[in-house]
Image 1 (cartoon, one colour):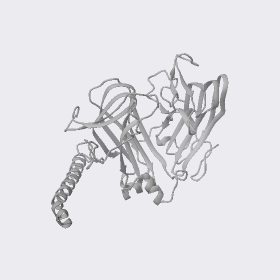
Image 2: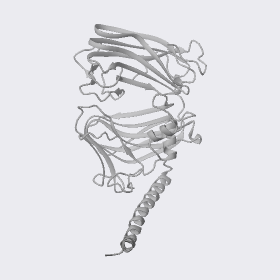
Image 3: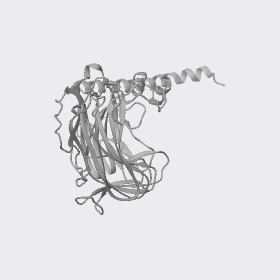
Image 4: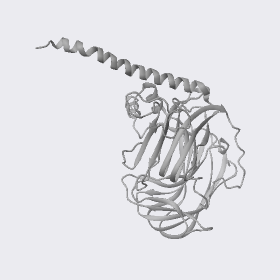
Length: 406
């Protein structure tokens, strides 16, 4: 009988060899990441997707995906269509039966020296048979849980447990958001860019490139840099600030909120319109959890702070078994303030106009306006002729710590 110690000793050189290979791969990936970032003052790790994640057959280091496990979506890293270097990444989807936005993403920690500047995210994209909307997105947050998850190198859920927080009392605040949609079916390489102002207090930033629809989107050569802030725009008085307010365009001006409920539809409809040729249809359906379904736009320019604004839209309902309303969310360092423009619409009713005015707090970071319904519920609503305009300065000063009207 052989000696167990001999067998163990005989295997140990191979073990040391495997460990050395893994360590060498990890060190090599770190070297590539550091070199690529230093080359252009780039805050992203592995911006060209060249370094592989040690121990994974294809995943690039430093990047994550929104993989849901559905068999109709594919994430990949390959050498087939790299713009520069050897690799690019892609996301492909063949079904919209369950509405989902699929994307590649990276989390970046923001430091105080980055505040009061613009974060500029750019990436080269290539569309292949896209039906729907591809996008690039940059999001700035004050997000204690994500920040500590990165510093502790644990999952967000683990960081939440360590901080003794729950999803209900998560202190996350949206400090800035810019998304660029594009719906060309097929393109060569095109550089896309979005930028967001980094308000003091922002501590984590996410960049994403993805697809809402079917087809394939390919990404390469991403970059995130900090640049001098663009000056705030002087918002005009009495001018509609919403893009494509009558839904006559390609839809790229709008954010779509669509929980993953089968049969839910949020889309332009040319069969019914208040004016023009098109309205926005929301067709409700059954689902598991309460959620908002509809379309919205964000006014992220900090000039919106301290203004009095008017919001309005026309709505027509058909057998709607829930409430349809205009909801405005104002992001401030103190949290999110909500304003309801009512009364809500429901059941079956002809075109009616919802309109109201309110003051935006002086410390507002951004303002979201949503034209939506509360789901899950059956029924339909058409929205049309939406508007958000500045009336003038706020009627009364809204000091920090005090909520806006309503």
